[in-house]
Length: 346
Length: 203
Image (cartoon, rainbow over all chains, first blue to last red; front, side, top):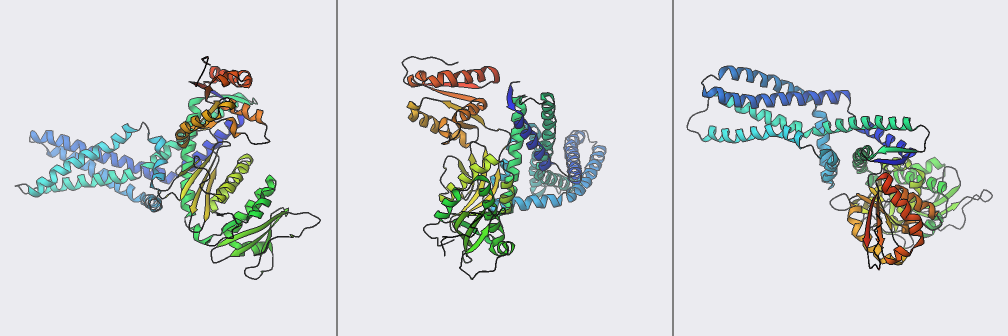
């Protein structure tokens, strides 16, 4: 395995990223329990149904199907009952996922929720096959049996109808549990992140106070993949949360002269000014004004604001109709002349 | 924002709560790069065609990816109100993309541009991050910038021409460091030959 030499602070960054991923993807004990109960019961029911079909066919040819049907039927009924209970426990989560996907689709972002798991899906065909093969087999059986029942010459017996209903129920269970499969992927990512974090922490410990650390490339690539998934989740959540902000917030634009004045500010002043812009934009000018303690000026007149450290003062005009704020002047406060002079007015 | 004074920046900025919160998490060097990016986007949301990709089907929600420092900005463009909604900022802590260092002679700038154009699809897919000395900002410690780029390179592309072979800086600074990187930390060296009088492999 090839190694890469990285700065110890980059290693710290990797450990931090993995900690965030563990926090983001870890399920609550209730979610974990409900999901495991659902998957175990669904698999037991499905494979019992499959076994019953196969053994039923074999035993049926020898004219001795009752025992097989009884055992298989009991397993299916037991598993089905447990699966139903587990499914009910998972309803809040399923409905949350359904709403989330609906909102993403509405915004033309359907691919965003899928791309989250792209990395984890690679090489998972065995698991996918294991999950969907019985469902496909059962659907094929149903597609054969149901037309025979409807258009066949003989009236189907009660046990055949019950059997078909059970198979349909199993298919529904499989499809619904498939809908919740990203829970499993979340658990896998959280577990991998935890494991990788421990590995990187071990490397950090071994490196001691050395500024450079040699790390297997494979570990870093895995960490990067997990971080990508975590960032994608964070981004998706941010977009979904931002949807209702549009109509209520204010757009803040700088006049060119004010933009030029802004450009002259040093780093910390610019950060503080941007904090004020964010506050004005989210909370609106009225809340902002009351915090600054200024007397309400007449509508359309310019107002003044200042940054937290009071080093930068700015002047702005509100246009309520278009929910816009124009910043018309920005000035670094001269402590001896604290008032803003020469600013443009609306 | 239907009517704007002609002296106002074309697009207004509007933060979402998550935008404000995530901006506060950014490291200082990313914040400074971010402000340059935001200023440019407010002047023209299409200012970075190579670095912005559409996330939503209608193209209103976009993701800007800054090469160095690594920074991603998610924003929505509302063309009717002329507003940029800033939704999310993040600096990936683990390098996902492979940093690609392009070593070339300044006399071959037009070939550099062609090469970068060729590599752009890979950059768009976030598979690689191209670095060449045109990224050095005026007034910065250029030697330090080059040195850092050389240290982090996972792939080095040599645009080999006669000018390249004639450059003392490439011969004495870049080549030894990149060959060392190839020998000691698996940096991949790729050489592209162009109109050469003498072909010399660097590997």
